[in-house]
Image (cartoon, rainbow, N blue to C red; front, top):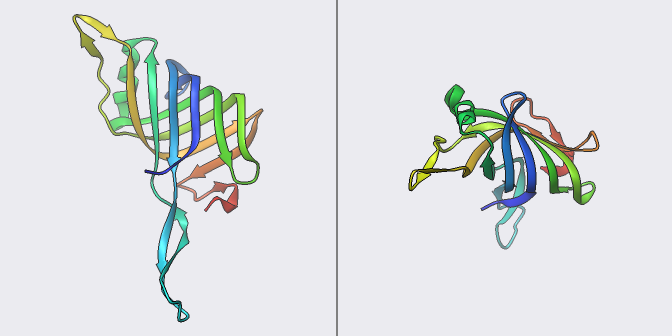
Length: 163
């Protein structure tokens, strides 16, 4: 399991543009460095060193769905989603340390692991669900300033010393 670089608490969520989706009751984004084995220069033991990349990033969110019909948005594009979150979060940024704020904006693009379906119990629909997203793009901003960004398509990483 990776390290939680972001923890969410009570964030409003929008999906695939500007459609209000619901409330992220809690969640996290986990990431860790990809390590390589190094065995050179007569070292008495092998060591692990950063390979300049990250392991696959995963976001886990517990959502309270506002409208069950919005689940259709999650099932479009073979499960590719673009989420925007806004609210309270704790973020680890290597240049600033731990940043905790009430007004954190987060964008997450990636593929859902599950096929989201409404859950029914005794005929009543349960509006909370847990989602796992395999992240391709992650951006976190506080007061409009980007403090953390990982874009796997362009290779852009902020801060650069993260990997």
